[in-house]
Length: 338
Ligand code: TF8
Image 1 (cartoon, helix red, strand yellow):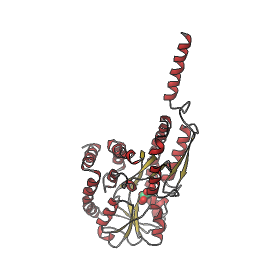
Image 2: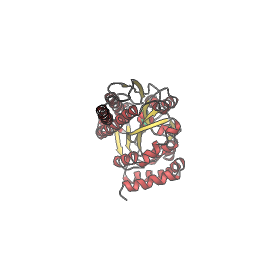
Image 3: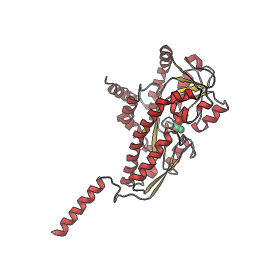
């Protein structure tokens, strides 16, 4: 009787430990995780990656180590995505927009004016629609863990203040390597040129392109204010980032190891969104201080721009599928309390 009871107790204790997620007696091996990203270490992306690395190390009892490599030193988004698919790199964070060549449903997030504020963005990305889109990745060799905030995008250029759609005329504008963005800015009248982010600063500096569009945080952290005079507050689209893992590699991990990564990713997401929003709230004043000339759009011109861009909805719907498009609209209605 006695030995049996002792075994039972020991098993119960082990079960408790495992479920307490204390990195004790878990199935965790020493792992080195190469995690690539495109912005520099001093950016919101760099800070959140650092936090992710610390969390992974802590939750794994020091066994799993993240080697974070920023500034696109492992290549631009599209190159890293391929390295993940092939299993040559373990993890990355990057734009969802550069993923559409692999997973067409990601184009959903490129829809101009899809969400009105970050509350709607969080609810949509962390809810059933965001999950549905993330679930399209494994069949392509990728695992999506969480969405981070890149943010609402705004326009900068070195030629003139853009106060109305006509001002885009003759502006050579760098866009992400993504058909919806290309379409959006062609529709507004710009000469849109797709380029990887890693080539953007020098393209602006050499005037290969006149302008670009990114959230305030990135305009600040990537020092675009050094080569761009005008910033127009357009908030034309909310861009997420997505934390990705190589599926080939992910499938070799134990459940405990996957849990460590998932847990760390969620903590990094909450930190990143908060950090990005705090920095973003100050960034416009910082950019003004750096000498940028900032203009808002009048309500009438903002409305005209929105109207011009409604036709992009049909392009996105065709690419993500009518079902997903309609479900997204229904979900947004729910989120807005309608
Ligand atoms: C862009 C994006 C970039 C991201 C980043 C490199 O303009 O907004 O900020 O892709 O991960 O390319």
